Image (cartoon, rainbow, N blue to C red; front, side):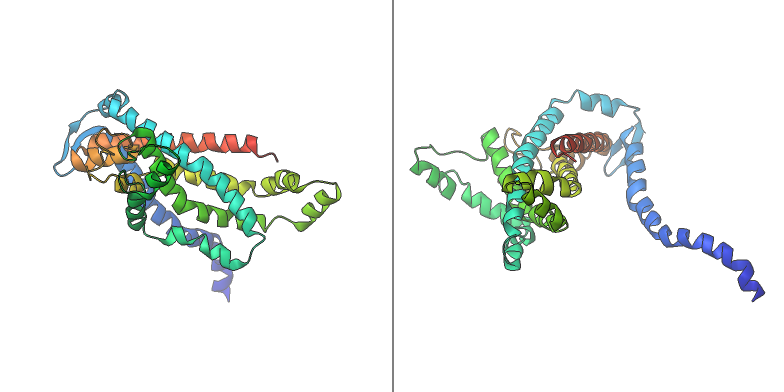
Length: 299
């Protein structure tokens, strides 16, 4: 009894730290350590297989800031992100509004694209967007539009990759919005209806402010995912040029260029510098998106 009285206060003080310790151990091993290690590699000339070849300071960063291929990849990334994300979020809001009035079976259907393997998605869209025998060019030909080379032309390639991204993630985002909409108190809609607010006004002054945290989450997640976009454009490249993003790099993203440098040229030091720039770009991009959404969606 005496022992229990003496040790209990100390145990109670240590217990919370022991409970959260596993998270910080895992985060340190798989989050902090790779980040610090990448920073160390980025200031060295580092061969992917051979290892350290000497300290270079900030030379990798200086070379990266003057690399035209990096700016080309950055421009492609921003272009594809805007083409994919803005319509995706707007369409997801529309789908969530419609699903709120439908049976649960419809909610399952919108999640189907998200569970289809991305390789299958790339194969299907590769057939649909074929220049000579694709059904999209066939339908465009019926209204007088000439055949489009979806992989060779820059804007067509960006649009093709953006459509793949939208097809995969719109349903998932719509379900997030639907869950958020159902948490908005019914009393707010009833009060707005009593004040004479129409359907659009109730959506603007009740629904959008009510789901603002979810909108912010999807915008930030989309921004991070968009900056790291790799799988869809890589599989869209039918020539398989190891991350080149087309014969003229017309849809090469930053992540694809990083893959080309790191695993094609084996220049791990330069790839690590690019990783840190990409990390900072992700943070700035997400912060800008949050500010814009907060201004667009009123409290």
